[in-house]
Each structure stands twice: as C-alpha cells, then as structure tokens.
Length: 246
Length: 246
Image (cartoon, rainbow over all chains, first blue to last red; front, top):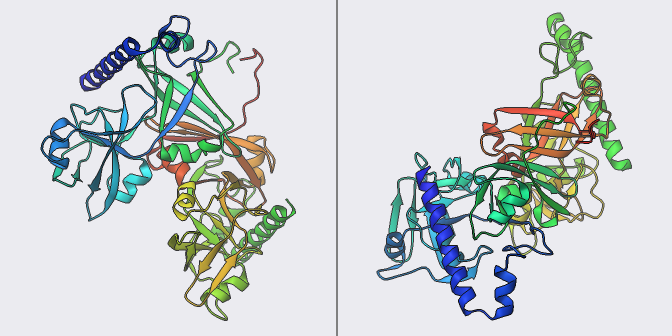
C-alpha cells in the first residue's frame, strides 16, 4: 500500500511540475483555459469530460533497467504523449519471455520511469504468455509472478511485477467533488454498446491535483463491450440501496 | 429473423428427439431424474442451476461444407459433449483465412451440422484475423463478412457468416417461468469477481422445451471478468424503474 501511495505522489508531483512549466511558458489564453478556477483541468463546458481509454499491454521500467535493456546512459525517449500530462509511450519496446518458451515479441514501454518495473497485461496476453497474472492495482506487485524482459543491450529477470491492471479512474479534485467521491473509493462505469452493454464495478478512484478524468480499462474489457463502437459511457458512484428497498 | 427462428426450432427438435431417445433407452431411475415434473431439466435442489460458459471461437458447418472440407461421405465426429444435450465439439477443426494473409490455424467445429455455416469469434480473434466481425445473435448473418475455411480435403469460401456471437442464455420453459421471462427477452448477468466484477446487459433469452440453463459469453467477456475465478454468478431480468424513482 505504501508503494502505491508513493507512486501516486510521484505522479502527482510530475504532473504539477509539468503544468507549472507549461503555464509559465504558455501564452495567456492557453494559461487561462488550462489553469483558471472556472475551468478545472480537462473540463468542457463547465463539466467533467469523461474519457475511457483502453490500456494495451505495456511495461514500466526503473532507470536502472532502462540502462540494462537499452545500453549505458540510455533514457526513455517519448514517442507519443498520453492523455495524462507528463506521461508518454516511449519509442522503446521490450521482448517479454514467459515460462515454457512463450514470449511477446514487442511490448511498449511507458514513461516516465518508476521506482519499480512492472508489466501490465490483459488476461488474454497473460494466457498467451503462459503466466497467470493476478488482477492488481498498479504498484501492488508483492507476490505477483515475474518474467524476463529482453532489450537490444541486455535482459532483466523480474522476480515479480506481472499483473493484470485493475480498472481505475484518474481524476482531479474538482472531478472528485463533482462526483462526490474521494481517492480510494470505487465507482461504476456504464458502457452502452449495441448488443453488448455492460457495467464495470470496482473502478478505483485515483484522485490527485493534476489528473484529467480518464478511466483505464484493458483490452479484454474494451473488447468485451466493443468500446470503440460504444454509443455512451457514464461514470457514477457505486449505487446505494434506495428508499423503497429496491 | 426467420432464419433465427428456424434454427432455434431445429435445435429444439434435435434436443427433444435426443431426450426422447435417451428416456426410451434409459433405466427408470435416470428417466425419473431427467424427465419428472418435480425436477425440470438441469435443476438442482428444486431450483435452476445457473451455468455460465465461455464459448471459445468455433464454427458451425452445413453437411455440404463438411464433405467439401473433410472429404466425400464425411460426417462430424463427436469428440466431447457440450452441456446442452445433443450438441458436441467435433474432432474436426478448420483453418480460417482472413484478408491480408492472416489466419487462425485451428478452429473447432461444433455439431450437429446446420442449414448455414457460421464462424463465431471473440473480438480479439477477429482483430487477429483482420476481419471486422459484428456482434450478432447466432443465425443472423445477413450482411456479415465472410472468410475462407480450409480443411484437409478442400476449402470453402463463405460469403457471409463471420460474427461475434452476442451473449445469450439457453433455458427451458421451467427456467423461463422461474425468472418471469419469455423467449426473446433480455436479462442481466452479474458476475462477482475479485477487483473485476461486472454486469452484462443484453443477455438474450433463448428458451425452448429441452434446454438447460446456461449463459454463453465469449472469451473476451470471460476474460474481462476473470470468470474462472469468479465467486458468484447471478442471472436476473433487466431491472425496472422502482417505486421511489431511484
């Protein structure tokens, strides 16, 4: 648990630092739209603007592992910015090798680096790889299986860190206030999709000052509800029993 | 729509014929347990006994296509009985070839044969194969994409029939009465699973005289809720607005 908090604090610090740097260098109009009190980060027309993103399999690396895998002095090179400020898909990929000579040839590395390396797979990926990945929230990797990561300059044996990332929602404090939830609460995501609508329970709130409202689900979850073709997505607190006992 | 009804009628006839043949040849005790009024088919302890099954990718073939793919005079050879009486996984498999030289090397054929050949994929499979498979209920294949099926004796070009099977629940009339639903209604399946509980809407009721209560979801849906590790499954009619307007 302390590991999770540490990582979230780090993420929040990174986001704050980047936003500060952006607002210092940005023209007045941009500064107003992204930092004014009237319009919290990520809001559109005075309301939270829900984004639901599918996280494909990816890994997070420590600085040390980046150097082992990609060569002394290597750093992660941003290829594509993610929706959350300060986070990016790196140009680098790794090969992941599981037991029984199974492997995934190319798994994207996300940046920035972290205090612990971690591989996040969908359930389907973990079956392909022959690793039984438990559903865990990011950072809670104690007792999870390991794997071998192979890069162009070397390889790393992870003793633990292979997980199926549990669904979660990033949000800032304005979003949390809007929904009446706090960091650590659970919410529901309702996806309306032709012939395959579904409601995801257990969506963990990860609130901090600088996040934008974004649910992360994995490829299995996205495919199960055909998210790309969904007609509506709706986020709500876990329903409470109602007055009539319904 | 007429095709669906036809197929369901055929399935019901097959089940009835098989049950009749079974009960004629069966000892009295077995006959009593499977056909007595006190214990409807598939019930345990006087209640419906819900089974939720993951349908992995598979295909259904016409008699003609069985002969083209596996040789003149070939029939489907049962390898493993399915939960629904009279249905089986065949020993035979086919290779499925999609566009852009992508293929699935071995897709199981299910029996008995049908009036139309049909390939049922999870969304993940359809992405691997490079075919955009629409979510459809079995038999509703008008306007769906096709593919090439290859067997040891020949190949078949399907002009249509590649679908992602929409979730559904087989049940008999006793089950339907128990839940207060009718053939063609929609229900909800609630899966309770550690950190990945979810509720599936749009579960189509396919009721006939001889089916056993069984929900069919695909591998994406099963993986999304980690069905194998689920602690509870619950089937219910779609909720109605309640008295207090909740």
